[in-house]
Image (cartoon, rainbow over all chains, first blue to last red; front, side, top):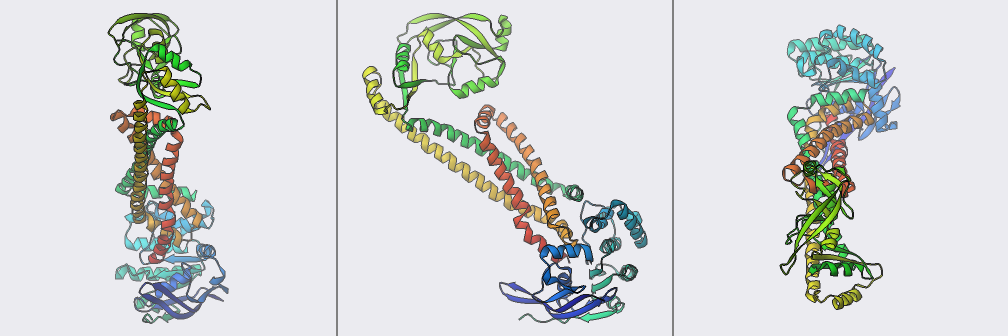
Length: 222
Length: 367
């Protein structure tokens, strides 16, 4: 079953100096449990496409479909709810809420989705042990390394069992050794949880592991 | 529960200097509001005087009359009240007396605040410093005889013995006269002291012009020039009051614009990242709002408390504590509204309208 479909989506920003086309017309489809890599040079619209799929903004033309339902049928509040329930997000520089421990940061999506505290404890204990960061759970985000933070971000992205995980350059801020390990882990965990994975990346090694690769070409602004 | 966790986390995450600056800003708002309130209060007091004058009351400057004339004036048909003019806050000057008279409401208020026992004096009553009462072995309700030596304008002296009841005791402070305190009008009536008439309040329906003619006929000492002086004085006070109100409005407006600008910048830098994280994770808009408003209210609340304390200390140090107390008592609603509006504006703008778009933009940027 197709979980995600983008049909001729474009995104244009209006600026005082003229319109800027951030994403030329793009179409793609991802099957349930499938994986897709978005590749292309900087400025080709990879992050913009992820932002549209995440429902953070709306396409200028075209539409995004999730499990057969179009985003255009949802209000911004509806998109927010959809993101909270069905999507996990992984960014290049993981953003965590300062002042909260890693555990509490990872628990946010679960709490937002109304999980009971007991279920949260069980789920996070398993997940953090699986990702090898169980010992770091009470640390502040600023007190762990980049690789550990990326694993914590992965934990947060999949903790609430989303149907789709979106990752934007998830290994971009890591060194080579950590990059391979993080990519491996992300793909493995996504496979185990059965969620579909869409990754925007420059990393050929990561792209090669995906079932599909969509190449975005840079298009000059009109 | 989630909101509480996030607010606690936010307060822990604030960098000390940013938190400090936010509190200082809120302190400044409170200080400005209270200061503005004081200015407004002073201006309003002045306007009250002018309003009384404009309503047809007969405000006079330095019309000296004898106690007998004073009594005649007060009993004239068409006159509701005669207010003696008192210099130096209730202490009779130029007369060789050892008794302080009080008459104007702010003086009563000031003394009332320093009452340790009993109440303000009525007819045939007086107040004493508690230290003096202790030395004399007197308490509230006891009677004592007071000999008042009065020197009249022609240089002659006479003494009057008054039998007065102690109505209340005052604590000894720098602003309380070290003298027995009796109502001025009572003192004038009993000793035959000269009095200056400050205000003649007319009964309802009495024409000021008609009363003016009547008074000129009855009291030769009331000269026509005095009216002109009084009018000029009222004009001067009116322009002063208006200027004070304008200054207050400008002060509060300028402070608010400055504070909001700085606070918006500070909070944007400090918290946008965390709010963006919540938006990315799909937190409901209400939750983000609650967290933002709660943070601002806590920071502003701390600042307001600090501002109130520092304002009180500053006023005390400057010796304006009585003025401020009077201002707050007579104008409390304005003080609350002014401070409230200042705080609310700061909170709403800080946490709401101006951050809605930047947070969404930041959320996209973070991705």
